[in-house]
Image (cartoon, rainbow, N blue to C red; front, side):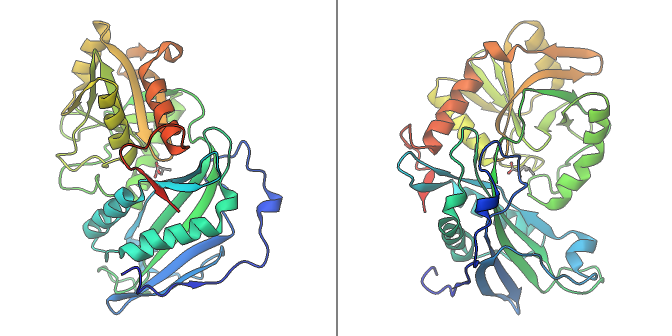
Length: 354
Ligand code: COI
């Protein structure tokens, strides 16, 4: 398939890089010189093109704008000390992208367009990969329905794009988290496991309410009892309880199968923790906190990498954590960064060379 993809490359005449400093970058604000675009029409993908980053011309009747057939991924590229470029676990994101596509009744994207196209795009814009700690090149593949028709049905046409953003940390400091009991993110049978745009839009109201109360994000709970925890904001969540790393399981389809989640669990196992993927109630979390067994709580995500939680509030009960004294999350974060930047052996084969 890779041999058969016709990819047109039109290079930008000038680079915008001279106008941007790659230090102390905010998340997702700047975009590189090029983007990849492909069209799905008549049951096949065509017009695969890397071209200068530019606005899209869209009809007001574009189906995605009305009914939300829109999915995306988040992936990161890094440079090692020799300047070689690697992408972190892109095949895992590729697989998840097509799981999301299936759930949203969208076509799957072939591997050559997703992976090979991404490699070529990153290679072309590799000068944009920042060197600073906690920085990387964020890769954002996405797809949306592109029929110009406001009848409710799956579109016949779709666009797949990939854009790149040199980026700094998503969350700068340990977070305060509000345990959500009124609004829900996902229900069994819903789209919680899909990286669908609507999941993020639907989360914004509850998050804004939590922010008004002084919290950074919410910890989502199950829709029936508001008792079993799911995710934190845009991240998976891991609890270090005694010598166990406990995280909600993926069984109910309410949780995104995070690539960073899986990577952190793999490294936690390597560090000697027993991994438990299972239902975890807020009562169990509070009991563990009261008995001194709940040592650390952190979020995992591509954008966020590993983000420490310094406060969890459930009703009037507040759990505070002294993140400066933590051992586990900082170790896992360091191992992950060292693997990504080539200072620790990549024994799981996560880094894909560009
Ligand atoms: C990611 O972690 O890559 C995400 O997609 C989260 C957020 C930036 C939407």
